[in-house]
Image (cartoon, rainbow, N blue to C red; front, side, top):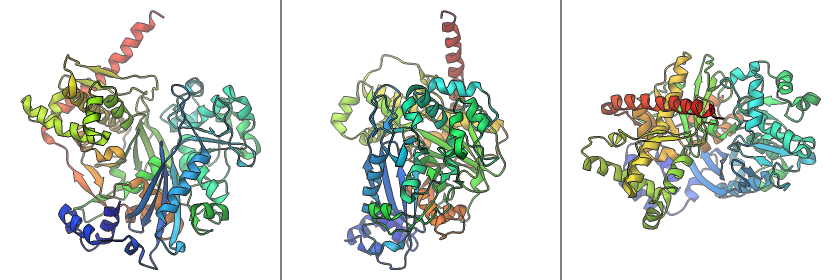
Length: 587
């Protein structure tokens, strides 16, 4: 963290030297206090708040996008039964208060914090009268008032909504996902009617946070259009759609329970932080608060303005695909013209940056999938005892793969999986098939045991995630999407060089990794910067705060190999469907 602060301070005058690790080590050892970071009485700072699946984070960010200080706090998740995930809005808010207070502790004059932006997972928050939590749990505990984004309880409700074939579904690739909010609300109506009948407001988690911060009920266009089937073309909720979904009650009083004031991301909210929230966060009442973004979308906002270190000009953001790769992966791209693609969500107008249409693909499990592969293997316990933290196990496996390739006479580590092929959808497919019932497949297993077996299996699953990204890209191309020229990466998996290189090789596109690793937090802070007027637009904030990154080029020697494996990848999908047809004949 301290290295980040120092890099941000030195970057303008030591761009080349700061790339030298030895130089960084020397200058870090010469610094003995963080007080110098806050020494300027006129500097403007912005706070970005990010609520992910398992933690709340905050960062203090400068106007050029450098993360000066950051903090993280775990949040609770209950899993009462398979595919059920529940959280608490109060637990999350308390975690936010803790991390924000930590990151601003070094700012003597709190009025230097000019704006704050919030992002969070697209999880459903349910409140009763006076904003009190209402249970979403069969346990009846009021504290559990959030259905987490990855909760898959609403499978039947999703099927019902999709059966309507309503016109609005064309904006979500032809069908809603059971990870979206309307199916979850229908599940509440059917299964917890007492909760449903007492609803005062329902929020996407990012919008709950801005409401909690300002006491003003304004919804972000990002959340409602991407996850709630809001009719952005007509700038209103759609009564016919809600009726077809079996949720006509939500139309009463001008859609009051859903929120009737919808604004684009990066807009200033009312009078800023309320007195209560300011006291809880340690900030000044009235500090500018921006309309919010979903967490992955905040990462995309931060990255779209990033350019390669060697680039002297800002390249076209339309040609970039941003991968926010953590527990799951979201694939974000924006275009000037609308692109309707089956199996890919969108086009969502102005959902991230005004003037652009967003298309959003994704994989329901990514980092979580690799963790599963690791932890369910017989050698995990041995490696855990030997190496400790899981991150060291990944580093060890990444180092082992070149040795295995050499010992087997391969010039590239990719060739280790010539006979091992994976379809990675152990938790269903979000894009571009949009089928939550799909499951994983692996072929080519042999009698090999031990750590070598784990290393090859890990490589095969990592490659499969990259083939999934290529599948999304090629699906977009079928619908005349403008060509991509760069892949952008942030999130936990962006720190895994094998994951990034596999994507560059398999998609045959250069991969850009921002020098500032915490681009979700930068994107959240950019919201506050734009809302405060420090920049004249959200696009300007993205370009000013996106910084530069290192470009990883695809390996030309493996192009044909991956083309062949990609054909096998697609064949695995055909085979799975054929297996199901065969077995359904017996049901």
